[in-house]
Image (cartoon, rainbow, N blue to C red; front, side, top):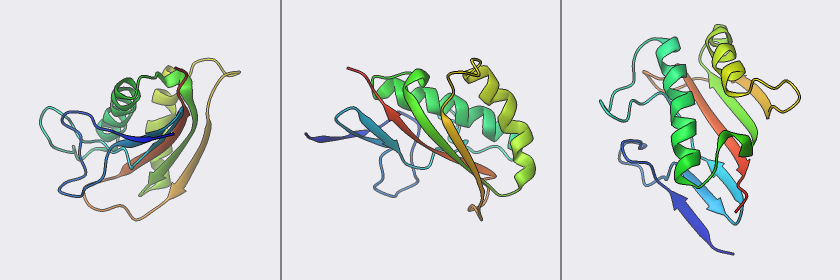
Length: 128
């Protein structure tokens, strides 16, 4: 089985040689997914805008890997302030409306680099 880096135009980790995700067979593991706007190249200041972009970027990464949000098994959110959960939950419920079919989720308090308020990592199983 070979590993494939997943890249998305406009999304990056600065100059670090890190892909958005790595696909090994059907297993997709993401790097840190943040609120980077792929068009402007900026990260907005507000938690709400960052969270919205994170959820958009999740969809972009999965599409680039050949999957959808239905393939996600687990998301881990890293938040500078636990109050960010209030911004995450509405997007979570929109992306995963079926309470009987949601990925596992964990939220951890973490000192993120400025200007990041929230970051996400995910694991998915992409059916071919």
